[in-house]
Amino acid sequence: MRTSVGIIGAGPAGLLLSHLLRQAGIENVVLENRTRDYVEHRQRAGVLEQNTVDALRSSGAGERMDRLGLRHDGIELRFAREGHRVDFPSHTGGRSVMVYAQTEVVKDLIALSERQGGTIRFEAEALAIEKADTGSPLIRYRHEGAEHTLECDIVAACDGFHGIGRQSMPPSLLRTWSHEYPFAWLGILADVPPSCDELIYANHERGFALHSMRSPQVSRLYLQVAPDEDLNAWPDERIWAELDARFELPGWSLEHGPITEKGITPMRSFVAEPLRYGRLFLAGDAAHIVPPTGAKGLNLAAADATLLAAAIIQAHDKGDESLLDAYSETALRRVWRAEHFSYFMTTMLHRDPHADEFAHRLQLSNLRYIASSEAAAASLAENYVGLPVV
Ligand code: APR
Ligand code: PHB
Image 1 (cartoon, rainbow, N blue to C red):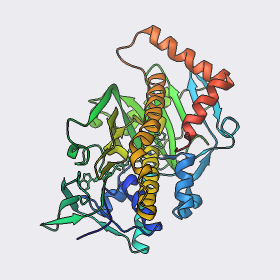
Image 2 (cartoon, rainbow, N blue to C red):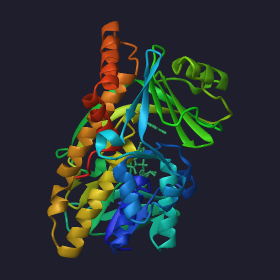
Image 3 (cartoon, helix red, strand yellow):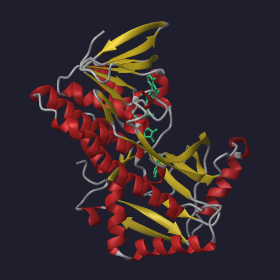
């Protein structure tokens, strides 16, 4: 089989790239080793920054998001038993975010591909990327028990942190940076209306907690736990009691309800450079990971896909490869900004079990600074809603 762009991975990066290329009339094939049902139902992040909303909307993939997504104009920082709101539009020239689950974005893009005659091959595992340093790279993959070859002009590895894309780059070319955090998140979905209109990020002496949501009927909540935490040690009553304690605020209470899903999310920062080797390009989690506190993982994946699509379209339509040549550097500049912001939010809001009281006092001082200074609030707001893609 032959196509113009071979895309590995049907996460947000691969699906958005495929969609944008298809809109521009560029043939592409997506290979995804999981089933459609699996990728449509795994629970992931839920905040779309303004750029991601704009990219989905302007490419015709925003209809359901605009109907079901919840526009949020701010967040609450809760600490020392006080709540402080950070407003977005007033600090960012009118920008905001959309609370809409990543899994819904994935469903929308798969449905569009199906309607428009795109090709997504599920249960197709990419085994190797070959000849990336030539003008005709290829992907070897396994589908329905047989091995196949997909020949293309460009390979886009959108295959997540454990994919083969990054591992197919020559080790002498690749540089990586990483940082581990001494905690993880225990996340739940609960069939109960959110107890707030906007997300609450809480710094509490018992640890970080986050109140997010999926819809007016469904709450999404997270608790900081140990990296090796055993989910079995967290029956529902313990989770609600811990959430109550960490969100404690006079005159406010958390509504409880049936928990429909529980999981543990590890926390890690990681960047690989460069994002290109010959005709092989990396996008999304394949190239970088952020801890979820800044809500940047999905948005970085979408920004990479947007940039890479524009570069491929220019090369395809005009024979001009300047954007392709600039892709790695342009994308990485944004990636490092998001890495810093995610690290900043994570270290400001979590209780590091190894840190001393001095570190805690610095966290509180920083939170008070954001709560009282327009300049500090503006800095958080512009990073949270997302800086311009280029
Ligand atoms: N062959 C085919 N598909 C593969 C292979 C392979 N060898 N290896 C991995 N995949 C698939 C995975 O099954 C997954 O569906 O690649 C996809 C990668 O998707 P994501 O992990 O969602 O990564 P990405 O699209 O970059 O989106 C990043 O997802 O992990 C979250 O927080 C992260 O929100 C961020 C977003
Ligand atoms: C979520 O809703 O899943 C979510 C929201 C904000 C974050 C991380 C996750 O920072």
